[in-house]
Every structure is written in structure tokens, then in C-alpha cells.
Image 1 (tube, one colour):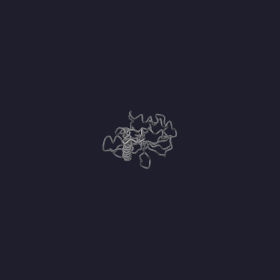
Image 2: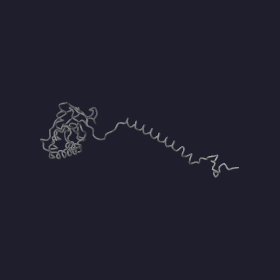
Image 3: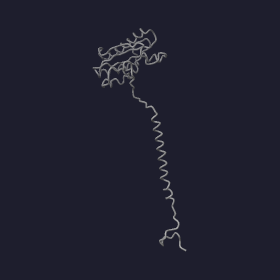
Image 4: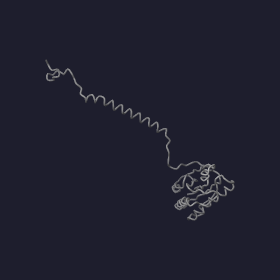
Length: 202
């Protein structure tokens, strides 16, 4: 009786065996396809979440103010602005130049802000600015207007003492107007006892 697996007589074998390697190769493409579909679905889901997230810009933001003047928080960007070409006038809010209640003296801790302003103006000798002093809403409006002017004059005097020509510095008062915080709390009142700087000329 002939051996059914004997290939010597030219007759193909009756039984064809598929080895383990052939079985593995058969399901690998399906595995890769399934993994690819999972990765695609995950990516689409992530994109949809990203589109719903608000992007937070750490950089400082220009906020419209009365008359279309933009308010830039902090004088640290003043030098860059004076060297640029952005529209004038532009208002800068001092980061830390506030006053004690009913006082117009510059606090020792806030002197660095004046130093920074003086340095920027020395680097840009054609610059002219207006300093505006403010008060919180306690007391009479007329008294707060006077106090705001005194605070602006105090900052001007400090700049003149650092070598800035007086004719480059104007002063004005905002009194208790245009508060940047609530006047219902002591912390808000402290924020409103401030000075602002308006760049008039580069």
C-alpha cells in the first residue's frame, strides 16, 4: 500500500498540514487593523476635547479703556512699548505703586516701580508721559480728586529726583473714578489707591 504522504511518485499528498507559523500569520493583519482603528478613534476623541478647551495666554492682555486707550498691566513692558510703533496714547497700570489711606507718600516697597519707569524714560529721551493718581471711594469726591493729584505729583517728584526732566511729566487726577476693583472691601480699596501712566509721546 502506498504511503499517502510520499512525494516521490509525483502524486500530491492527500493531507496538507498547515503549521503554527501559517496560523499566526493569518490573524496578525487583523490584529494590526484593530489596533489602528482603536488609535484612530482615540485621536478623534482627543481632538474633539481639545477644540472645546479655552487656551490660556500667559502673556499680558490689552483691555479697552475709556476713550479707546488700552490698559497694559505692569510697567515691565514699558521699555518695549517705547521702542515700538503701537498707537498712542497708551495707559500702563503700575504693578505695585499703591498708596496708604489718605496718604500720597510712595512706600519703600514700591520704589522699585519708580526706578523701573525712570530707567525706561532715560533709554527713550523723547518720551513724554502723564501720571494719573486715583483714590478709593471713601470720603468726599472733591477730597479724593485732590488726593489723586497729590499722588501723581509725588510720583513726578520721585522721577525728577532720578534725573527725568519735569517738562516730560504731566500730572492729573482720576479721583475716585474708574475703579479697578470693588470699593466694598479693604483689599479692593487698596487696589483703587493707585497711579497710572499714560504714554503721550515716544
